[in-house]
Length: 182
Image (cartoon, rainbow, N blue to C red; front, side, top):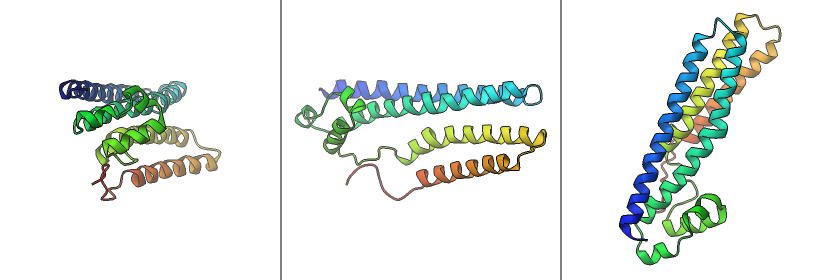
């Protein structure tokens, strides 16, 4: 591939990734606002909105962003390669879909296993997890408001939220490693 072509593909995919992030954050903010407004009006609406929101995060946000960031990385780091090195790379579709092909290409691209750099972890993992935590808090408040006959459920929800925060912290802490081999 020619440098101009790779640069154009990188730019296009980076723009798409930013657009997807904006769409997801806007849609989650909208759902959360409607959920807060419906808090005192309808238990069912709050539960349905929470389910839709969490479903969108796990089954739309995470997979779409993960796939698009693979496209971005492929083209971004291919820019640093000579045409000869680029010719050794697999096709971008294989890079995105096939773990073994991606593993081989990452060696050529000089990427280590984790492509989730700290900024990506914060934007693409922490923000959606915070939305989930806010929904869990709203549901806990709703349970408390109606008197929780099953204290175990309440403790379970609080523990689940604590584990989610711990998971996010462990995932996103800066280990002083870069995503590239030196």
